[in-house]
Image 1 (cartoon, rainbow, N blue to C red):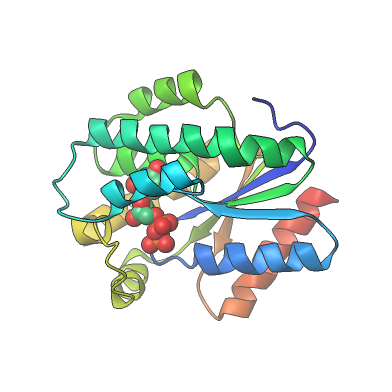
Image 2 (cartoon, rainbow, N blue to C red; image 1 turned 60 degrees about the vertical axis):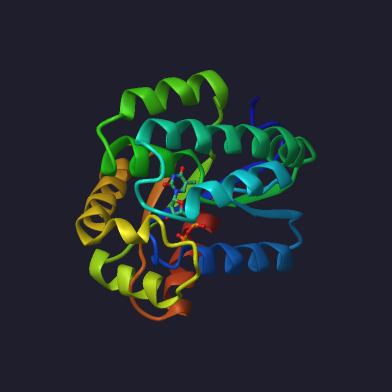
Length: 209
Ligand code: TYD
């Protein structure tokens, strides 16, 4: 499934890095510039994938093995891609996705277990699509975890895996930005929300022009 005529932008980062706020702000800014925007998120984004989301983000941290998690995230992503992302791209829209396959590469493939080859194989087999541009919000793991848990959203299964886990995630996302420089931009996520927005906007404008 090629990215057809639209533009596919993903936001990535650790829990509490502010990426959801920034994804929303970016969607509003692009709409204001006259773009047709589809703002969505993972896990979820389509009715079936939202059902799978609940299995993944709620409950005991040990509820699933890393391997089972990879299958569930990929199943949710396949449904999301078939039913929402691919049609929106085919219609020429800008798709902004709050997390995509990089989250599986880093959460399940790197931080939770050393399973990156399995994640990559399943991605090639079942998804086969990458964003055109990935904005990775970089943030101190301890500060981000405090922010994430303070929200007490009831979706804290991954936050509950602890501080070391969050530090491994932060390191994994930084390494990813170095591994895939053509599509990834590492954005400093510290400081006031509008300062971070300005950094994100600059990266997106540079890409779109
Ligand atoms: P998300 O809704 O983005 O949570 P937050 O807004 O708190 O960052 O994602 C829910 C959780 O699922 C989050 O802890 C990250 C995790 N996750 C994975 O482990 N693998 C994945 O492939 C995805 C998409 C998310």
